[in-house]
Structures are given as C-alpha cells and as structure tokens.
Amino acid sequence: MEPTSAGWRPSLASMHGGARRVSDFMLSMDAEPGETASPLAPPEGNFIEQRVPILRWLPKTNAADVVSDVISGLTVTTMLIPQGMAYATLAGLNPIVGLYCYVPLLVYAVLGTSSFLAVGPVALVSTTIFSMIATLEGPARAAMASALMFACGVLSTVLGVLGLARIVDYVPKDVLSAFTTGAAFNIMFTQLGSLFGIKVATSHAPIVMLKNALVALPTLHAFTAGLSAAAITTLLMLKKLPLHKWLKLAPSVPKSIFGDLGPFTTMVLFTLLNSVFGFSALQGIAEVGVVPSGLPNLSSPLGISLAGRYKDVAVLTFVMLVETVAIGKALAAKAGQSIDNAQEFIALGLSNVAGSFFQAYTCAGSFSRSAVVVSTGGKSQLGGIVTAISLVLTLIFLTPLFTHVPKSTLAACLIVAVSNLVDTNRIAELWTQSKGMFAFYAVYVGLMLAFGAAEGLMASVVLFYAVSALKKLGSKLS
Figure 1 (cartoon, rainbow, N blue to C red):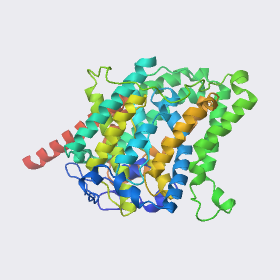
Figure 2 (cartoon, one colour):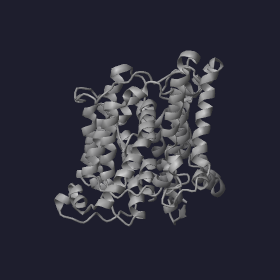
Figure 3 (cartoon, rainbow, N blue to C red):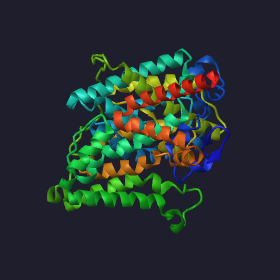
Figure 4 (cartoon, one colour):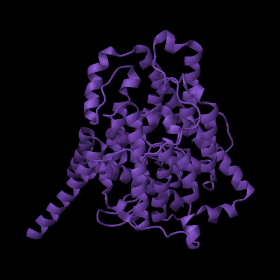
C-alpha cells in the first residue's frame, strides 16, 4: 500500500499477489466529504468511439494481445464459476443464477472504458440484494432480483447520461469502509447454516441471523462442520503457502495463481470427494442439487412491481457503482490509462438492463477478478468476451457436474473470500489516531449489522453529515 495525503491507494504490487482488499480499491476514491475525487481524463476518440469504446481498441488488438486475453479470460472463468455460484447463494438465489452474468459481460466489453475491469456477481452487491429479497420465496425472489437489476441499470444509465457520475464521491470514506466491514460480517453470518449444517431462520438484520445461528448451534452436523473446516484449510493453504517457490515455477507465472485458482480447485476437489465417497448419501451433507441446464430463457422483468422499493433501488445502484468506479479508477491509474466515469455508469447500467432479461441479478466490478486480469497479463475487454463465451459453454455442457457440489464448500469459499472485506488497516489507523473517530466507525458497522445493508448505509451517511453539520455550527457559535 502507498500512503497519500488523503488516504491509501493500492500499490501495483498489491494487484499482483498478496492480500487484496476491496477497501484498497474503494478508498482510492478518497475525496473528502463534499469534495470530488480528481477525475481521470476521459479517453480520446470521436463521439461514437467514446460511447462504443470497442470500436477504438479492437482494431488495435494484435495476435499477442489476443493470446494474453484468452489466457486471462479463461483464468477469470475458473474464478467466476465458484464465486458466481457462491455469491448467488449469498443473494438467496439458485447457485446457477450466478453464471447467468454472461450477457452483462458481453455488453460491458462493448461499452466499458476500463481495459481490466471484470464484471459479474460480487459479494457486496449480493449481500445487499439478500437484505432486500430475504422475505420473498421461490420464483418471486428470483423475479424481484431481476426487477431490481433492471431498475438499477436504468438509474445508472440515466445518471451517466445526465453527467452525474460524481455523485459517488460524496459518501465519506469511513462510511464506505464500515460498510464493507459490516458486509463481511453479514456475509459470514448468512453462511453459518451451510457451514455447520444447521437450519438458520433468515432475516434482513444480520445480528438477528447470528442470534438464530447460535440458537441452532446445538444441532450442529459434525461431518458438515468437519468438511467445512477442511475446505477452509485447503483454501488458506493454496493462498498462503509459497507453492510458486516450492514448485520452482517461471517468474512469468503470477505468484498469486494458486490463491486465485483456490476456490475452483477446492470446489472441484470436494465435489469429487463427495461423488466418489458418497458423503451426501452416507453422511447427509447438503448438496447444491440439480440445477437448470442450458441457457436461461428470455424473461421480462417489466411486469414486476417495485412499489415501495425505490430506496432499495437507490442503495443497490450506489453500492454497484461506487465499487465498480473505484476499482476501475485504481486499475486504470496504475496502468497509465484513463476511464470515463459517465460512460462507466452507462456501460454498467446497460449491462444490467440487458442481463435482467436473462434471469441474472445485479452485476458490478469485481476487485478480485479484476486483479487477476492484471496479474495474468490481460490487455483488453476481449478477455471479458472470452469469459462470457466460457460461461455459455459451461451452462450448456457442464451444469450436471454441479449437482454434487457440497453447500458447505461454497460457504467456505465465501468465508475466505470476504475476509479481505474487513478493513483492518483502517480500523487500526483509527484506533491509533482518534478514539472518537473509532467510536463513530464502530457505530457505522453496528448500524449495518443491526438494520441490514440498505438501512445501515443510509443511516450511517445521515449520521455522518448530521454530526459534521453540528460540529460546523458549534465552531461558528464559539
């Protein structure tokens, strides 16, 4: 990490291995409240090329770039399959829905201005969606997820067209950091049922889910808990052990490759173990089960009423945009490139609008998969197109293989993945510098856990600006 006068920015090394925290990217948009972060210059080109960037970069792509993008796209696919299934589960949806993001990937590849941004299901958006649809069941839940995706896409597109992209700069960095930290604990709480093989009553309030899990803990399924522990251990070993050094791999192979492929490797390993030894039949562990095969049918979200959910749309759109733009800015800055924030809003918006007609749910930029694009030498959004094609082939030919994936393994992948969401650096910094600011940070996190993502984020923003206004008023009166 590299210190700046206003906050922290990720160093290039942090994108090429080691622990990569989402807060590193989100806090790179480190404008103070009420100020805007220094925007990167919009890309060059005529109006058409600025609105359809693929027309600018595709003619310049050479054979070497194509090879690099194919390798990058396939590597991202191996990450996206387990992550997509796990994140869809986190959102309260069928695991296979996480792989229906191929349409947003294709649309963003055509319209996006970031060469490295990997779009798809992400943890923060998934847990935010779950807090909004947890009370619904069955088809109604999936339909509402697609309807929210459509509405978020429309709102994002409108904001981009109106030139209101700077709106994401007005949320305080500590509120964003607290949101990601609270979301991490929220995600962990939601996975306790699958992790320990217990039935946990769902709730939009994370703290209530924790209480429900603790109440159900005496009914723990020992074999499931043991399998979860083994999966977590496998993931951590692949991530932390110096396997690159032990195997004497070439320097051109990214040191983070084993950690990046950890979720896919772990999912394949434990699915094979379950299939060969019959853990489900003999020990009663929960499996993903039969999932729909083939591509999703075209389904319009326009008939779903969003009455009373306008707040949900606004919050979900904000979470989607702030994570995506922050990651895109950080990656572009390190590569000496630029992104057009307004065009990013439009690209992400239209990506989600299109995806909502194919039973997907809200997509955003992924910090882990975007970092892998960089570390594997990706050059352009051609890699995203490769990933989309790979997902299509997976849905057509490979879905029967997902039947025996243990739910505990997906939960383990989530637990390890979201551990990087906890912003330990900022927490330690606040504790050292100001106990008062640390207390407010703790309150922000508490609001997320007590009321859920949407209400918690809104309450934290209101609290921050209310306290700031009172401080300014007090200083004027004195």
